[in-house]
Image: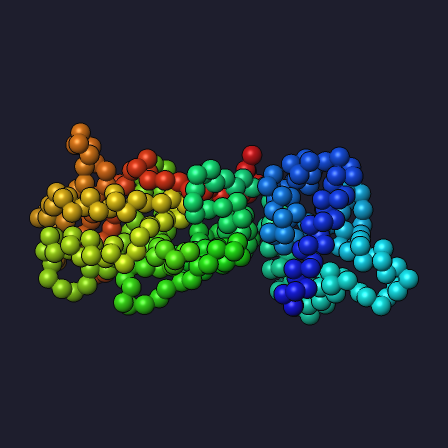
Length: 340
């Protein structure tokens, strides 16, 4: 579809929703509640920031007491050109027809997949962002949430790292924030650039995930070089020179009835404290080379987190028992039948 047509569609829909909503005396929050939508949804539609599915159009039109064609018709053009009926078909109607025709061309199985996705967008959800987040705007919150909903419409598995990277890139770009993935051996650890800032992305979705402690099972590969803990620690510190910020998407619950994610920023300054960590080789281990720890503690001696130099087949660095209270939760997404 032509981008100009899509922009015109969003503008027409936004204006009509606002007009009809005010005519019946609803606030944005009241309309969203009556439609079973998130409280910020109507606002984002009226600001031209969000597309609307067919099923949501039907719910909106029913709640507003009008038909879908009325909701999608440019009222100015309709008034000015009423004598030219049939000469100027609205872009909205054309796009709806194109979509319906495309659905008819799908196989029954493909139609079931589309239907599951549409139904997925209608389940109860709670999206939240920290008011002081400089990375997750309201639009990014909704855009990434929609992609999480779409993923779980056809999967019980948590979003993998590669899918998270693509979803985050799309969510930022669709929100007007430039972002592009970087896949280069010369930029180890730098996964994505967001508004000019190099960022490293991690994920966590273990079955036994802990609410208040973060575990990164693979921060970086340690390679086949010399296995000495001071050298490995310095490799970690060097690794962090290629990015400025670190985010991890944590899937705290992936039960089909209740899915919950959170986006947490791990402060780079906190990770750089590893330069003075207490190194300890696990002499009792049967691994060859022997694994080791690098403990980072606060002034009271309490553990902040630990580096774990895994000497197994992959030879990788893990981060264990990282206290979430030392990090920043930028946003959470919860959805499913059990979401209250």
